[in-house]
Length: 227
Image (cartoon, rainbow, N blue to C red; front, side):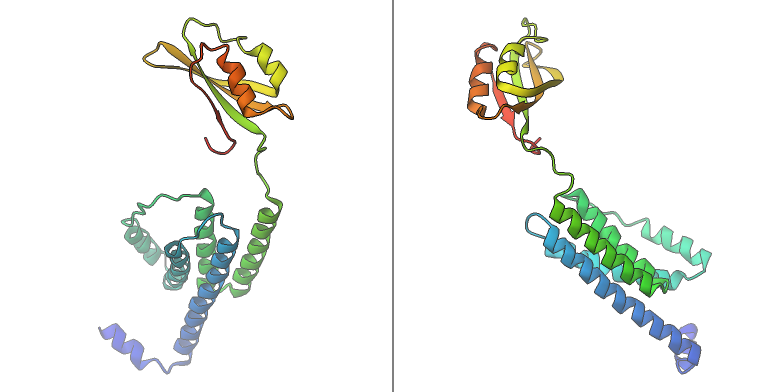
């Protein structure tokens, strides 16, 4: 209480005023920059963005900027805050790994503002936003949609090594056996292939051809990116 009264008494002090102005600048700038980050998130996110998640990024950015102001060069305070924040547990799983990157982007802007690196925070946010838009526009890293996963169930007494080589050569450009596992209490095998069909060959043709060689047991095709 005495410390609070002392600070209020020294509010007119020039140094105190400078610190207060810097703190306000850090808070407002971190809020604006995190707003830019969340705007980029909304524009590049596939699906309906969560308002709660967007608010969280902006709030965390401001909170982190204040934390960095409080810490300053005080190591003891830094360790105390680490201990305090260690009790926090986030129990909501991220639906998209990219969401975590946006949280860190907002926090990084807040850290830079809290440390007084206003220009660095602004440049970082602008360049990162441009890079995210570039990746989004180029659709960089997208997998080949023509590659699919073929799952075939066969009886355990069948030799699966070259069982489908003949029909695969006729219907597929590429095929690769990636997994073999037992199913139905060990009485059957499930074979998993990565396949790429020839042009003009439908999934129905592949399914029908495989069923003629696996005793008409279960066969499925999973589109790329769906598991």
